[in-house]
Image (cartoon, rainbow, N blue to C red; front, side, top):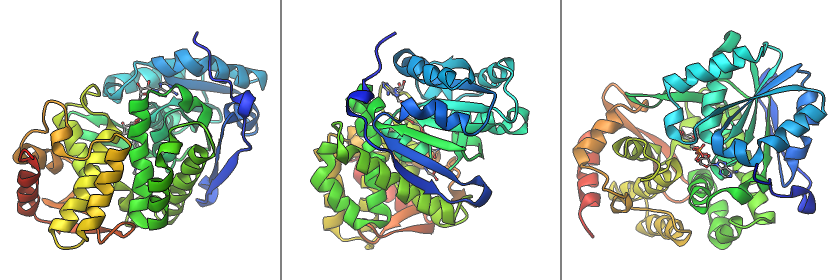
Length: 381
Ligand code: NAD
Ligand code: GLY
């Protein structure tokens, strides 16, 4: 067992962000060392038992610390692991996880604890949504991406051969514990990928936060107040949108800024994380969304340049040429978008921008306009 980082040496008071959703409301507790309070926080929800679902990497690094906290609070605890990486969001792993939760005798009043990145959160959350027609669950996100995005808002699910996240459920967690000390062991590539989702919040509706990212982005990569602040601001931004539009009938779609392009790129790479991880695809998608907006005459060119420049400054990709092994053709990318769930009656829905912090939902974008744009973007520079 590799040692967990030592949050106790520099634990910070938790910042608490509330997700107000009526009877489904919950807190997000953010800070260095909040994992130590997992036992008391989960015991307060009064389960008899907890099934921790994790991936093999996270379990090796950190599961003993989580299990010790839960068992210290008198909770019967079991551990289910899946291989690390996107391929675990599959029907086969989903079935295994459901059966393991049942084998651990988890009842509806108990807790499934999703302990990992977005893959584990989506997979375990979906299992919790359907096992016994719904078991409560807690998110303990361990990647930056999961802490700022996927652990909040209740979207859970797995991938289908037809596309990403096409099978799933809305199932809100009862609590989110985001221990920023866990990010100390995250590979820098994964950290960067999560940072793309941080930047996204500034681009959606908070130009001041994008300015902050430009000034402080590199400091977010090291332990310290800027990191915790970036997580807290991101969670607050997401919580605000989710509380107004839990089921994505409108405004919540803004959170998909960059994602129509990103999902097509991930599909083009066959979900092979050695080529492209989700957050890297999002980074390219953000830059493309702004350049596409510029091409349509919606967004000032200097804003599109600023977006790409900031992503590049932290080492993120921002062009189709940055996809290792190539991004495919305009036709193959459009075809992949056609499978995306943001398609209504053949017309594509994009999140576009009138500038930094001025994103909006654009329905009925013609495939031809997207094709011309992608053809231009695919030309060697
Ligand atoms: P991930 O879960 O695959 O984690 C990335 C890698 O980091 C894995 O290899 C994992 O083992 C490793 N890792 C995790 N925590 C670690 C730690 N503390 N130390 C060392 N290694 C660690 O990927 P991700 O980027 O967290 O999540 C991507 C997934 O999230 C995608 O499937 C995406 O669709 C989904 N997502 C969901 C939502 C939502 O709202 N539900 C939002 C955004 C993304
Ligand atoms: N990540 C998109 C959403 O949660 O709606």
